[in-house]
Image 1 (cartoon, helix red, strand yellow):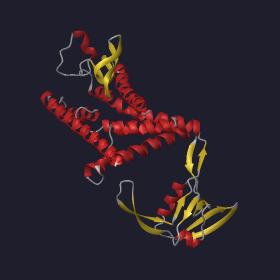
Image 2: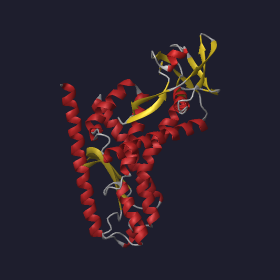
Image 3: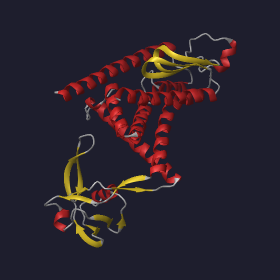
Image 4: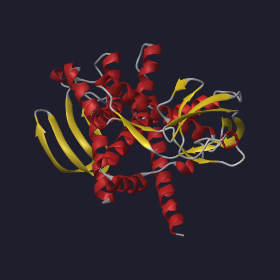
Length: 355
């Protein structure tokens, strides 16, 4: 199950990414000679027109090979109009950017489809437990109460309630609750407590000492609302991914949290067992991560090419070919070291778990 799910997940992500490059190249008049899922020897393929569509042996990526992609290549007269390196800086940038853009688009489509078909899941502001000695307990709030408003503001979900309590700054808040079909009112003074955020960093927030019951309600949404929610979810995941990368680089988040192909295979298998919806959400999450990682300014990645194009735009001439070759070698070395490290992390995680 893990291997099959891994192949499906990785195949979808790679196909969508390379499809972005391929379609934009075609639209902008660049000739594509090869569209490959995977690297290395060809397993199966078919040539249609000038393009050889193929599946290759090593399934850890893919590529689109374009005419004139290598500036040093010798072209025939008839190929110059189809050459990537002979296109304008804007067109070349759009072709490179299209790969990551399609990864974000895939996530948007998955989220939109889910919200449109199934609705928007919201965690109800229903109290699960009340901590003794905390403000909610002292005020008389009980497990099973549903908080319907704070300071007169109606609530739909738990996160809204938690945010309003935290934003109180420790000032008393008026809480409207529903208990056994009866409306009750409480005045509660939130307490400042120390906690840790998603990155394990110390932080402080105001709470009243309650936990959610975990009850979920589903709200039907129209296409415009589904679109807005899809954009919001994609933005939230993108923001969290960028923050995580930044904190790993800064050393405030352990690089041991980085996972590789083995971890992806394990998680893909788990999500597949949980159902098609869980697997699709996992694909959306990985697709956003792949889009962001490809935009990092590392040579050989899309972000590296875009960085070269930025230098070209500023200097008004292409970057020296020798400098580009050295940068590509450095970039490839970084990726190889990163791949070794994530494999090490995966294996260490398995061994530690076994112990």
